Amino acid sequence: MARISRRHPMLRRSQAMWVSRRVWQPRIVFWAGAISIGLISVLFAVLADQAQALFHSVIDTDSGWRFYLPLVLTPLGFVLCAWLAHSFFPGSQGSGIPQAIAARHLRDDDDRGHILSLRLVVGKIALTVVGLGCGASIGREGPTVQVGASLMLQVARWGGMAQARGLILAGSAAGIAAAFNTPLAGIVFAIEEMGRAYESRTNGLVLTAVILAGLASLGLVGNYTYFGVAKETVAFASDWPLVLACGIIGGGVGALFSLLALNAMRRIRRWNAFQPLWRTMVVAGICGLAVAAIGIASNGLTFGTGYAQARGAIEGAPLPAFFFAGKFAAGLLSMVSGIPGGIFAPSLAVGAGLGSTLGLLLGGATGTAALLGMAGYFAGVVQAPMTAFVIILEMTGNHDNVIALMCASMLGYGTARLISNEPLYHALSRLFIAEAIRRRRSRNLETSGSAA
Image (spheres, rainbow, N blue to C red):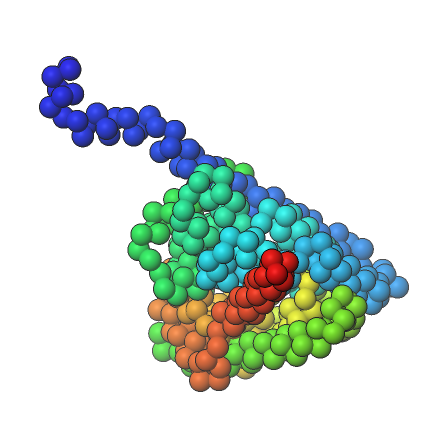
């Protein structure tokens, strides 16, 4: 045996590596981080659903005066979320996806820590749940991306791993996969939306994180399709006018949402600069009151994520003709208010409502029209067509509509590019990068001043 060891020193070194703490510690910490993303995503989903159920039980559309409670409850909830986010959890505002994108571009660990941290994990989950509990038109999927990226960045610190950018990407993909039970969409999202300059060496990290987070989620809630199973199939000839309409009109309306959100947020950001806390709370209160008014006018349909409405449309129940307009406005106001919360689920609800309306106008099947509307509108909002059709395909479990969904997504993306060449999440990420640069310059000035 000693003779074999002398002849094969590489074998001896390989065996030593496999029992080395330096080799196993980063792997174990990484695996634990990925599993924790799946577990926390499930907990987040349960809390979000309970918050929405509590809100709807409080306002109860059949109880007379209680139906008007949102006129007080919703603006107060918005103000509370805005105050807590500004005072205790700065960096938690909005979706969370722009923060994860920005963190991949930042090189300094302190800069990343301002938008990805364990503190923000707690704040993001808590404030998103509070927002849903007061009727905000937000989702939990974007926040789950920031939660996943924050956990993986902490894993990099604990495990002594140098691949911070790759781990942020892996955490973001695992967050999407666990939030929707869509592993393929998580991987596509990581490639298309999170990592425009994708590095092939991160493949293993992304795949492993998605698998482990998915297994943790499946262990708790089992296998499911987010919107149930869509049974209707796009007919080759008769439904193609609907495909064109949903793609082009959906993409145009999605681009409009993106343009309005970016312009409004930039103006609000400049206006808030003079008195950040008070003006932030004023904006949140006004937006909350407007969301409440829209919700009451729509008989409560526009409150919350819009999941139930979108699922109903996919299953064949037509939505009111102008539901999509009300949900569009409620989602836009919730986003520009500055409270934590995502736009994934509300955007899918807007798309389903738009598709349902177009289906009624063009004589197509409601379920098919809702699917196509979701693809066109969502691709228009985020300008990520592959993510749009893959995530909808996985969430509905119907692979017969692949080509139609791809066409609607590409038409939505192409239309949006003609209207706006600035993808929403990446435009918002530049605001966080600029803020990090200003913070660093201020820190350097203070350091040089104290040294002098």
